[in-house]
Image 1: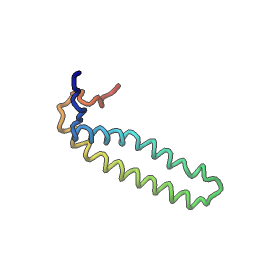
Image 2: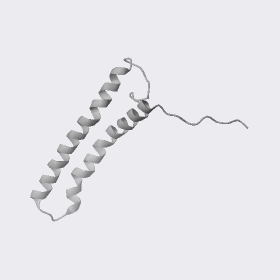
Image 3: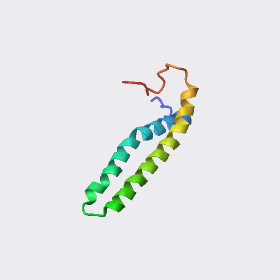
Image 4: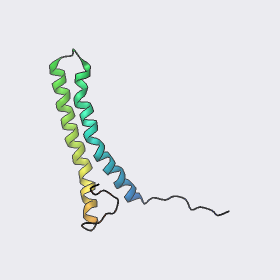
Length: 89
């Protein structure tokens, strides 16, 4: 019987991969929350507008917070490198 080495992922690479996945999901979450007042139905228009602008501000802040570590990681890699597979399909 051969003993397999435990699976170890580098902490920095794992964290950057999770951040890039969160950045990809942010627009989908934003679309869901922007369309949520449509599902509410007969609520007040004022409440829906406040909600939509609150979601918009949260999306801008979320994109800012996700972009900073990802931009720093892009500077660590050589231009044109395919490390991580985050390039175009």
